[in-house]
Image 1: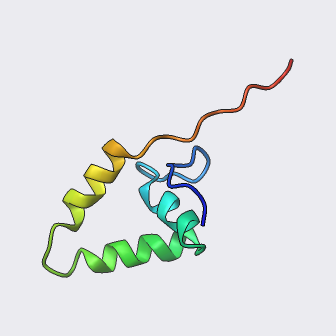
Image 2: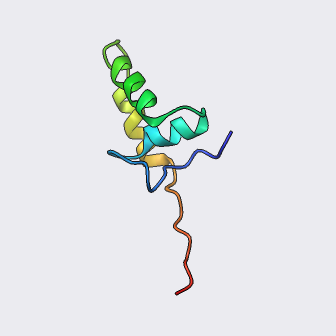
Length: 66
């Protein structure tokens, strides 16, 4: 499993679904569909998404030699 960081290249809103998809080795679109379906159930899914957006670090950009 990879580290849980929000990717720079696979973001739609905050990159949380992209980070979870990388962590669990699944596609980002699958993770997004699962999140939208989970929002149909009662619970704090949206608040959890916001908390992960705030607390997960963003992936660092690598410095390229010019």
